[in-house]
Length: 275
Image 1 (cartoon, rainbow, N blue to C red):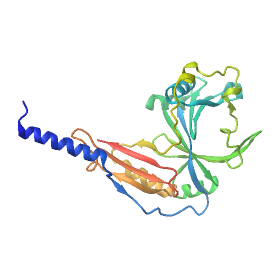
Image 2: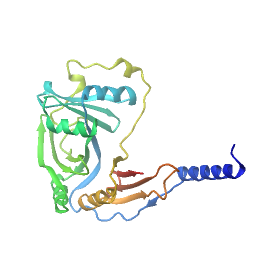
Image 3: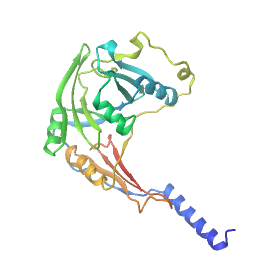
Image 4: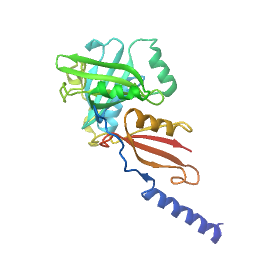
């Protein structure tokens, strides 16, 4: 039996949790800080997942979340090390990559540590070289120097930065490449010999995902502030919103979170720590 006092305490706690869940909590920041003098980060490009079976993972997202097979790179296109299946839904683009050769230590170590997961968060941008130089000045690790990659349809300018954990950011200037294609070296999935529309996916109702709003990266204890400062220093992002465990919690758990954003606020990485 629950007496009247205990019942009142339970109801008060439930009311408090309901208010927390439904209210506009947290801190909203208004100072956007400095804008890049040269170069510009426009929006999310695509997410690259490193997985054990790229074809299977891509088909799962097509069936469950309404994506469509879009582009492909693999043995048939001349790539002997990496197989890539690219799926698309409106402006949301996911690329699933798997190793084609046994003994790929980089892939193997990643999968052993994380299982299937996001390896790269690409940004569409302008003036890759200027953005990389600014990041280098701030101490960022440049994984791949700026380079031009071309095929018969055009060219892109690209470079790669190391961010938190094993995650990277690929910066891509697509101004000289068709918007209806993925990247140089990829073919449309429909052009491949064994292409077929999954009969289950064809019967599913549309999901209508529109675009990538933000990407969350979970951080270790005391890891949120250093990674937030990394984005402020190297990419000139600004703090957009934050909440700590005193603001967002239940009786059994709590959450701290910080969102940073590009100057135009089209790119919003989010960092979280669960308690």
